[in-house]
Image 1 (cartoon, rainbow, N blue to C red):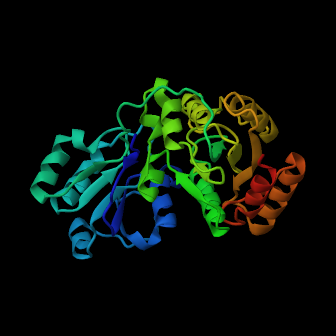
Image 2 (image 1 turned 45 degrees about the vertical axis):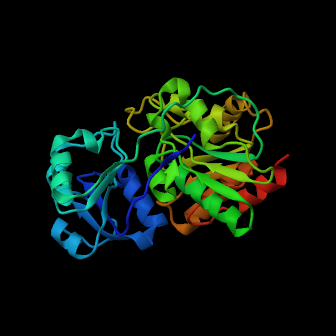
Amino acid sequence: MQLTTISLEAPYLIYLGDVADELHAKTGMGIVYWRPERCVAQMRLPDCPVDLGLPEMSASEALAAGVKTAIVGVAPFGGTIPDQWLPQLTELAAAGIDVAAGMHTKLTDIPQLVAAADSGKSTLIDVRVPPGEIPVGHGAPRSGKRVLTIGTDCAVGKKYTALALHRELERRDIKATFRATGQTGIMIAGEGIPIDAVVADFISGAAEILSPDNDDDHWDVIEGQGSLLSPSYSGVSLGLMHGSQPDAIVLCHDADRREIDETGGNYPIPELDDVINEALLLARRTSPRCFCAGVSINTSKMSPPERDGYLSKLQRDLGLPCVDPIATGMTPIADFLLQNIQ
């Protein structure tokens, strides 16, 4: 079965609408970070506080600058497209610029956008569309090796960690493939399966398709989704874990996060060693030898001395390599992963 594949013509304009914070602009930020050579402009509503550091352009300016695709760089709660974004998105489509989004609300279901795209001869690209006829997961062992990033919450660095680990393995000439499971990852990789758009009964089957049998020395680095701790998204995370059958997991966490986001403080994040132990208990249902290869921490709000002290203490407490995937790199986790795989 084919993965969801997309082709986005560069250069890109990243559309931010009125997103209130960087946490919910993670799609745009991820694309700018991992594919900077493709990003030339951004567009926002007047009160938007998030700035990706790209030139601000109108639709006509973007067209003159050669922009081919406008990517909605926002991942709002619920995945809907607000009405206040439509005038700008309509203007882009009518100008002949393709519009791509990974929202649960489909661009092609909005008549105003469809009409604008028809008049501008542009294309509306909905990324969050899974392939058809996904089977139920069967749990049979598969060849090859797999590592899955998991999180204490949403938006804590699972995608960045997977991409950074994939890059580190490739740097060592180890055969590896980044397996995208969300809108941003699919836009970066060009293929994948949007796991949170799959009907619940078929999530583990989708994960099996995403990481099929492979060479014994090949690693699939699988992008995690949601969190086993989340009252909203734990079902997605567990189905992805069971279907992935990971040989190892990497726990991702935001050092500044104390509770599950958008739950009103009702769900504090447990101690990280408890999170690891509970995750391994679940992972070993389909992968009995699964182990934790390390902890990846977003320490972006810390000074370098604070970061180094925090990571060193955490590493002593957990007995596992602890890194910031951007600030310190994935070398210790890659070393531990390769040394401990059976």
